[in-house]
Length: 310
Length: 242
Image (spheres, chains in turn green, orange):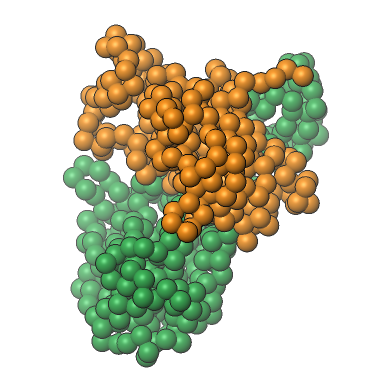
């Protein structure tokens, strides 16, 4: 019952701003596909095109057998959409919002209760409360319930975890995994790089262009060079001194350490040189360890490359 | 030991809304030039506490002193001595960059000459001189956030409150933003910051984590990790907030 998605050379311009530049990719039936990128990357424009709410400047896209422009009525029947901004009726209660969206799609809460049960039971105690009076986490669960109420084959979630704390984010992903088990294809966008690892495939997107599309583990594998985590007594000054280190690129603060990429093959030689350079510059408590890259390292490196290329 | 100057002093802060206790007996100090991370789950009571610290809402009981003034007695003195920016609201989208500086500079009571100098200084530092006459709505989010931070410190406040300043911003700009934070702290401005990015929690000197209206933990990132026997701030947060 799940559907695959084909996106073919999609471009979208607003006046002279190119929001999407020649996007081509396909999304497998039943997978969780993540678009990872910051605000302004083009994620929302792409999602509006896939949900038939926006017409592309050029290119085509299909959801299952349906074209997003020609077959927009069919698309809307089979797709659930959770926009980035909370868009339900604030003056209707939880229950009224759900009944309203169900009736638009000629169905009822009762008919599809089983599908939304996992999520809905968490907000059911507040079903008489107006949506405007819910906390952020509860609003998000109500919005997801409404997006699922017509039993869609595909759901598209635009930054569902932005501004959400680390615990709620984890719980939200557990819900998505349950939806996936029911055979629903899930497209989700996020600015949190750590959420990439929870997707089957991800597209890294920036400035309307795809930087990479692959399984998260393959994106990490394709990282070029050796990555090292460095720390020393004066972390703030350290970042400027590492910028001047030989054979080094991509100097970025990373939690409690600074990540640097070596451009030479000999790790030992590189570490020895770095150590010498830092102790001569007056640092102590120096640690330099080889580490495995995560998605954010890859994103930073790809962004850097992209800026150099222009 | 050298006694550091306290910029924020919170003693037994309680805030009630009707019968609901949003802040329960909060007590902490923040020092001059410190970067203090104020973390917690959604709904834990962070926003309520920040509003009190900024002089926007009086505490139900307890004593809160910010930048030398008691927030209950002198809320307007507090407001004049702090800076504030948030992800949700910072600058005016329908004014140009220069107009935003002029507007906020005026509110903070700077002279025309000072406003001009500060505008020049920050735009040069951000390499954004070419944006002076551009309407803010046309500027990318990351740049806007850097401008908003500059505007929030243009009157040399003793402390600046940053409420999720980097939400949705790209990873390079997020890091540039933190360089600006470090630079201000080096100059002696105290930085009070909230974030949902746990790697950014590591960039703070000390962190408090709130849960259900109380501060459940307060220490350096390194001590918190060792106290809870985990390797990342994300795990510390999940242990406390779940």
